[in-house]
Length: 261
Image (cartoon, rainbow, N blue to C red; front, top):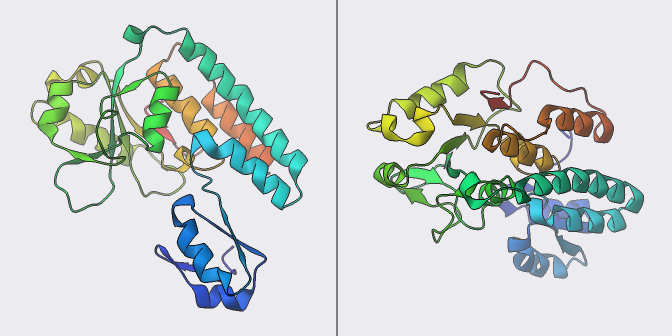
């Protein structure tokens, strides 16, 4: 990958590079398909809209990619593997009553111009994760996918679980220093001792890596286990299966993906 030409700078495709490469198709995000399609029309290049980061559309998109790349059997195999674990998580969550679903505050570190704490609202991947994992996102009824909220709002909502989601990081943490610092920072905020999640030590830090993309089924399994430790799930085992079978990679035993486990 490091030797391949870069065809995108920030959020803008480099159409001159694309023109030189003369690809058969260009795959882009659903939100940007209209613009990209218009730009490439005169070049005779087909644009295809596939996101590959939303858990609820991943299966259909992988199936389409299987047709495009003539890998229909491999795409089916991947989708069936994911569905096996999605169905298991759904069966566990379906047995819960509404009272058994904890209120969850998801904190992000996305940088924006707004003051306050970044969180995840309706339409975000994390909101979808939370619901599928058997939680109730306390920001789920806000108007934006990635809004900012006042800390006082969090105190009033009094979540039972808090998950910190750094937006930029390496594959995982090499030691516990950084995730421990994230948790300590939450505990040291004024009035934090009154929050149920802090009282009951239900504070977690979750890797960015498996929240999006083809390994997002792993992230869903981890979140379900965080919210419901009693669930019969083995997220680490699922991650090993994914890496070893689909990517021919060894599971990195020295990295931390969720803290504390």
